[in-house]
Length: 281
Image 1 (cartoon, rainbow, N blue to C red):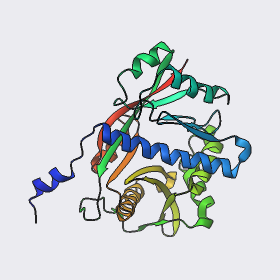
Image 2 (cartoon, one colour):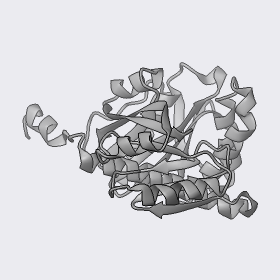
Image 3 (cartoon, rainbow, N blue to C red):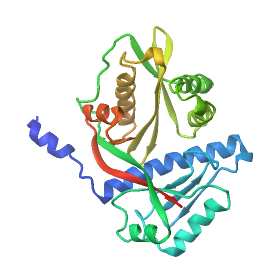
Image 4 (cartoon, rainbow, N blue to C red):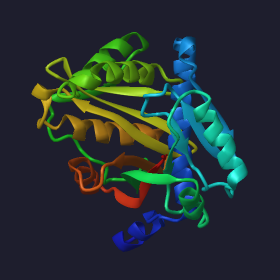
């Protein structure tokens, strides 16, 4: 058996361009599946995505939080020609032009954004950690009364209702959150997890997998189910499931300095970089 220091050295993954490309492509791929599912379920929505110079441009409705790009300037150099094409994609659909951009994108991209009148509007911590079937440091359940399982196809609405209840304090977004949850549960390639206490659903979590990277999303706990270890149980179950599917990296995103970020760091996640969302004024 190798010494612990050697094991840690082998598991360490540098937060470089290669990692950024894997992380951003996984999120882009997962959201592309979501948009395709929206288009299938509600064709009248006009949901669509296109690829321009390695960038995924998503339209999921003018007000949807998924309507934006992923990977801009990370896979290919971006010039005014590509930016014209991307901006036209959104403008033709009456949507704002938004880009989530990794700081590892091409160096000339910031100057181009400034020249075209973009403004920064949001920051996101993109976090990652190595995982494997043999890893002994995956989160263990803290409450043995909570069980976690992958929902069946006929339980998508149950999952969506539970996820929506977890955001019940944001009543003005309830309809949008429920609609997003339903589509997310039905997304091609989705695995939706449900945490139950005494047989009653209290929390949700979802994943997206692409080329060995698992994206953790969809975390929500109903008000009366909080502070009982549901999300820790969901985290451990999703990481173990992903490792069994051959994933070697897990990723998740959170608001910088948030409780979600601190909890992720407590469970082995590191900050790969802080991503900036840019909006065309």
